[in-house]
Amino acid sequence: MIPKIRRGSRTHGLLAYLYGPGKRDEHTDPHLVGSWDGFAPDPGRDAGADTDPKAVMTRLAAALDLRVKQAGTTAPAQHVWHCSVRTDPGDRTLTDAEWNTIARRLVHAVNLAPEGDLDGCRWVAVRHADDHIHILATMVRGDLRRPRMNYDFKKAQAECRRIEKEMGLRRLKPGDGTAAKNPTSAERWKAERTGRAETPRESLREAVRQAVAGAATEAEFFDRLREAGLRVKLRHAPSGDVLGYNVALPGDRNASKEPVWFAGSTLALDLSLPRIRCRLTDDLAAPRTGTSRTDRFAPARTRRDAAATAERATALLDEGGDEAAAQLVGAGELLDALAQTSPAATRAELRDAARAFERATRSHVRAENADILALRSAARGIVHSGTALGRGEDGGATAMVLSTLVLLTLAAARWHSARGHAQQAAASRQAAEHLRAAYRHSAATPLRTMRERAQVLPEPERRRHEATIRAALGEPDTRADHRTGTTERFDALAVTLAEAEKAGHNPKALLEEAVDRRELETARDTDAVLVWRIRRLADLPALPGGTGKPKADTNPNKQAPGRPATYTATPAPTRPTTDPRRPAPRR
Image (cartoon, rainbow, N blue to C red; front, side, top):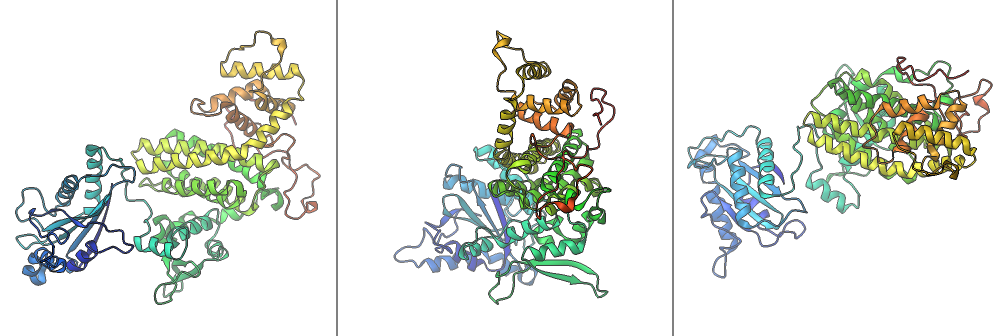
């Protein structure tokens, strides 16, 4: 149940709208379901052959405004309090008596008309559709004083949560005031009239988020906005310093044919220029030592680096400290970067995941943004690498990073749940579902390739790796006769262990480390999760036979234009050195 509160100054004008046909003929059978005394005139039911509905409406408006006129100049200029209350589309249809109860509880909760207070403000509740009512109240009490209505929106929200529980309606998640502002009804209707799939506010918010993802400097951020096709207007102080910015969609104009500008802070609080400046750092623009630009920004390479970085962020979230809040901001940038550069087949799911997770990046918990340099660097690398191919090493690396991001978003959901952030936790879980869908599409071909490669392994080697896998997972060998061959379930994992062994690792120790690194009970495909973990731990290419880090004699200048440089494995991520089970790779 969603309350929406506004203030106004025209009692009769609002009544004319509530009892009219609506802006799109959506008003049917408008009538009162409640009033301050239960005897207010009802233009929807009291009018008849001998009574003009307009005359009844005028009487009702005069009754509501009586105390406003008596108060004279002491009455507030915006004396009309208007609250619409809507149920969820899946809720049952409430009766008029139930809506009357809801209206009375809300005007009591916000202190307009406390129960039993004879001097409470005058109000009416009008129903003109099955799923919602409108409460109109005039904010002058019987003693001609103004009601104390501090935090009326929060009080109305809290009362709606209690009503949902008591009436068996869908229970919405309580907010904490950190969500981005939703589009107004006028913005939605305008988008519908102009044939837009979404409102300009939503399109601009996504475009600004993507522009800031991995940006190193303020100038680069503004350049990305312009490259995205947005109109950008900077606000300057008398000294010439930039104070803020406004953006507009090309072609989006108001009735005066002027562009409709949105300040960054009105799109979302964390998109204001001061907040963005806190995230920008020139350190992102510095190239890595000994790494060519071609190597650094190859799509597969940047995605494997991002997988390792996201795994470290997941570990920080699992620790549960407040300092992990910054990781959520960096993870949001990483998702925005992937949404921009993903193949067409997964782009829609990744955009939905980034949009959902955007809510999870904001809460009242504050942390130092310096902690997200690694995640922002990974996002920058992905943006500069361009669109990844949906096949080959690019496809495998995309599956690898998506597998890790599913874990990260689930860790974010647990982190928020532990702090009572219901909306953020729900958004994290929603993002995880979109990421799972994108992962299933991306991982299908790489995993199939690994299973096919397993068929050429000698049977004794496959049997040996399968025994190692079963022992690590605590699964008994159910085959009655070991000479009948191996099962196909562990093929992708077996070929991964074979590659790791060839690279100089101990397969048993590596597998045990992957199993112990994080719980597997919540994994929908344990074997696939272990495949990607081992490939990250052992610095293996994302696809068997794929390319990894550059060979010593590789000349990046010889690469074909637009193609990634040849390499055989990602650089090893920073790892604890206290695990004795992992041997050093042979050189």
